[in-house]
Amino acid sequence: MQLLNKIFTSLRGSAREAGEAYVDRNGIRIFEQEIAEAKQELEKAKRDLTSVMAKEMQTSRKMDSLGSEITKNEGFATQALEKGNEPLAMEVAEKIASLQEELVEQEEVQKNYVAHIDRLKAMIKKTTKALTDMQRQLGMVKTTESVQKATTAITQSYASGSSKLLSAKESLDRIKQKQQDLDDRLKAGEALNDDFEDKGLEEKLKEAGIGESSNKASEILANLKAKKK
Amino acid sequence: MVDINKVALQLVDIGNDAARGFPFEVQPIPGEQEVLQIIIEDREELPIFISATEEQILCIAYLFKEDEIEDGMLAEVNNSMLLSNISMPLSSFAKLDSQYVIYGALSVNSSLEDIVHEIEVLSGNTTEAIEAISEFLN
Image (cartoon, rainbow over all chains, first blue to last red; front, side):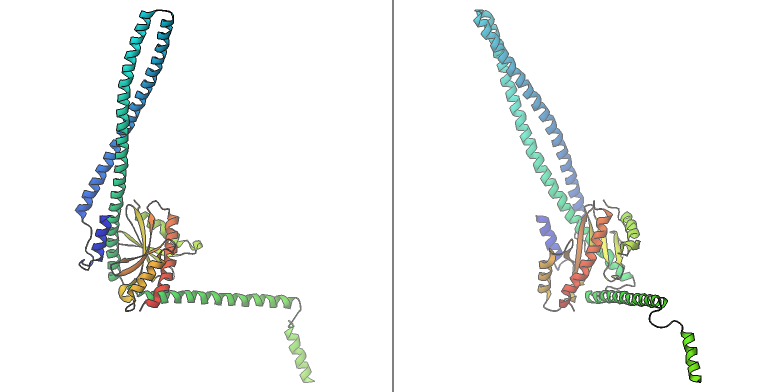
């Protein structure tokens, strides 16, 4: 939409001063107000829809009962005619006529309700979509503002602190060096571990009397004796 | 709305949890917008910055500045970054003024687990991205 286009232009433009706030605070407030109003409008439309739908259902029920009333009276009129009671049949026919008149009236009312329901549904759909759009756009503006503020905070923190921002390559080299150191330490540790394990084996062999003799002293003594001779 | 200070405290505990094997430190950065700086052990040079709005939590790491790109390679770098953007799990490239960044956006309803996962993935993607682009960098 237009807003992203605005952000595009504003962020791309060399005209923008560094750190200059893109966002117009007052504009945001007005926008938030519009969103609040749209929400209220939507709530009202939903309440209206519920009440009109209830009325439409009542009217439909009334129409059903009028319909069955007419059918019932038509039966009565036929029976009166069968019995040759013309005046009674006429009386019933008059009642049917007034019932039919009422039915036509109710049909008119029901038609109006249905039209009203359609209008409210269309309006709810439209407002919901507009509201989602506005909220999305507000999110865009607020994110832009927030990221700019965050960037300022980060930059200031680095400027005031002792740590300096390294170039990407320097950072990567250092991290790789640390990774290498860790690998080396792990390897050295493994080698040391292997040594220990070897010693363990030697000891076991000694215990089993295999390999080098463990009785060195007696060996030395024997050698000395042999030399003397 | 996420309470960034609450998240910070919880992150401190997780960062100190040696059993997780992903140690990191949390430092709040003062300013008009609250920002957390996540310093990951052995990757101190590439910290991750976390900020939150009503809608989302943003995790951002700085990659390189435009002037670190070798002369005449700007278009090539931009093109490569756009082409590879979608292949990166959870992270995307962006630019803040002349600073190239990599970032992930999370819903404000994300769990702490999600945030930690995001930090871990973003940190990995950061070094990998610089590595991939380093041939074009001074």
